[in-house]
Length: 160
Image (cartoon, rainbow, N blue to C red):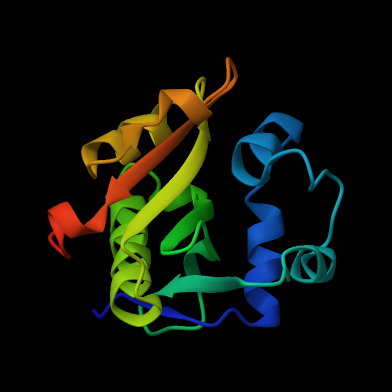
């Protein structure tokens, strides 16, 4: 089985919409700009943002395993955003693989020298994943609710 990133298709957004069970999950995943209720078509429209590229994680079948976005910002940094894994696959390393492939894309294709992200402090699973990948808190840019984290790709290369 080959795990890879591909451009999302309409049915991916339908699946993604079904993965968000409540307002807190939506906030943790998408931040305050996207709120329930929404359909897959609504999500596709709302997630189309300038300078942002969306990806679906797939195993070669039409079924989406995960979803994430990269936003080119801060000069030579890319922002990792809206990372989510299909509920039955959580805790199995799929999120780690999704992040790893997104980081490699940021480095190899976009030419990013760093990857940043924002994570709510009470999102323990996401926070643990990002820390295990080598992301470090940027205290000067963080708030009481969320951490801004950064991974310097010049230090870690593509080993993530």
